[in-house]
Image 1: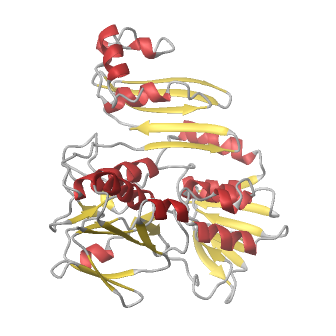
Image 2: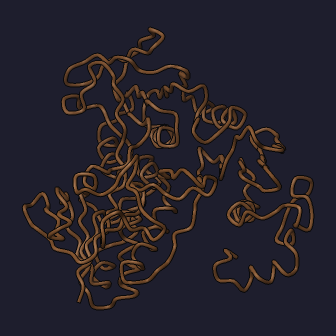
Length: 424
């Protein structure tokens, strides 16, 4: 009987445990989690903050699930050290847990920029917004009079602003970029998102950064890079995340920006696997460089593949590409692949007020798209990107006609319908 050990109780870790149990009904599975909660929906924390999701509905897996799968979870416990020679993990409780197969699914942590006088340990009104606990603490602190400043106009910062809307006096979002969601969208798409959010009286200070804060036990004022100052009762720092690689690196496992894994999700050390936000994934659009993709579906898929392979399977992880599906105050955004590329042979845009349909084409392939309030064909576009389908082989031009499943030839339609991996 084997001993499987998983560090991390998020999407990658839990899906790995489920895959392991599907292939191995009797061996022991333990999960070490530095959070105090069972597996919950991280995308739901902004809806908990707004009051749209109740605490009991934020969990994806309850205690009964772990019990039914015979999975032991050590909550509120940190993995302090991995000994790959003795094949054991030292925890914050002083326990040494041995393993035959180990999965590192440590996720990522918020990046904290250098801001003069900023001290998370001392100032009680400064928050990150990545975990359920962050959302709980923030909800407990805000009042109807709170003047909130959010550092970061990316996905996390914008969802924090949505969660806070209607519960505080004012919200100001600050970002060094010239547009919201700069790592995902071009200016034209970003402007649609920003204008929609501004209708909720959320203010943006773009092409600026917070360079200094005032206040000892609490932040009372922020100073921007242009010299502007204004009052602040709540400061939310949401400028990005960094992969949690220290534990792996100290164990002698090969790391770059993320943990390096092969196509089977195995690290440079035998019997040690890694998955999720902490790893460097195979990039569909680059044969030379891997990337860190902090994406929930990616973590889920990689965890499942790693779990099966830990039991002896040999399943290759597919190359992936960036995908985002999100809404802001009812405005739906779906983006995938490469949005901007100087090599593109054609960028086709159809836009109206609060609606956009953008396709990015290179070398007879669809390599990216952005859909705003126009998401009906997202699945087919994603399939075209993933399969690297030659557009010239399709039944008609996807840029001149609203596509459906019949964009594929009859032979391809049949193949996709009966192929369990076809996505239809």
